[in-house]
Length: 98
Image 1: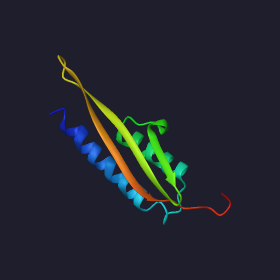
Image 2: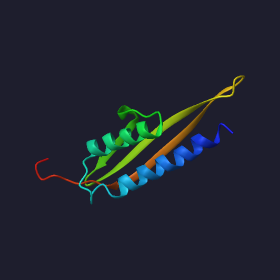
Image 3: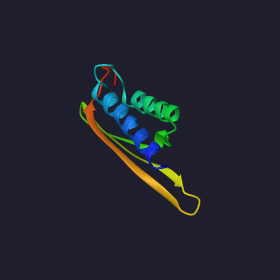
């Protein structure tokens, strides 16, 4: 039963990331704003993610965001870590002054 909550949280968190990346350009977000918003959401949801865990690779106006995070599971006699991945590609808002 301890495995269900992390899977549910990971599903919701990855969906949040997917939506953030999908609408990054239309909401005029920079990669740093995107990173900040994801870290804030992770904290809100109890997902163990820091800004340094989020890799953003730029390719012109597009980018790829990759993230790996782990949930520790303590079963008293056995400790286990669930590993989750998120990888999304989208377009980013480009400010003319950059």
